[in-house]
Image (cartoon, rainbow, N blue to C red; front, top):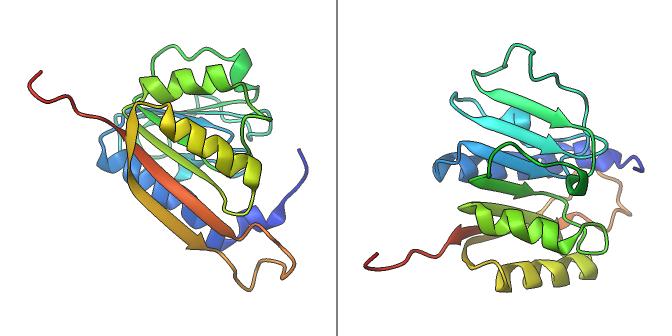
Length: 180
């Protein structure tokens, strides 16, 4: 994976804080992050009774036997999601920096989208393949968008020629069935 130092900027790291907030607020305890890369959300959860698993070929190693930093279990799995089978169904799913179906197997991702109660998906606003894939994901998820946040992440620590500083983040939640 190419190195994108701007992803480590304060402005762009706000995506992880926002995603973690929504996953905590919706009481997700088995969280799967697909594509956390070098900046996963694991450092943004500060309460116990959670399992946070990040699956990405470039995620930094974190041994599940290590002492949990905040009372929750962290797993960093350095492989593609298509080659990994979590031991549980996620109730929270995080897809930050989503690049679209060209880079991920749609059927695999949609399985996790449908299993999770809450999904956070985020991409560059001007990345057309990602935006088309997000639209498809929302339309076929069986969920509704409960939040749509546009982030302008320009800042002093991001190169002026960086074209991916305008971001869109969606929070999807399962559609409640009335009278069941």
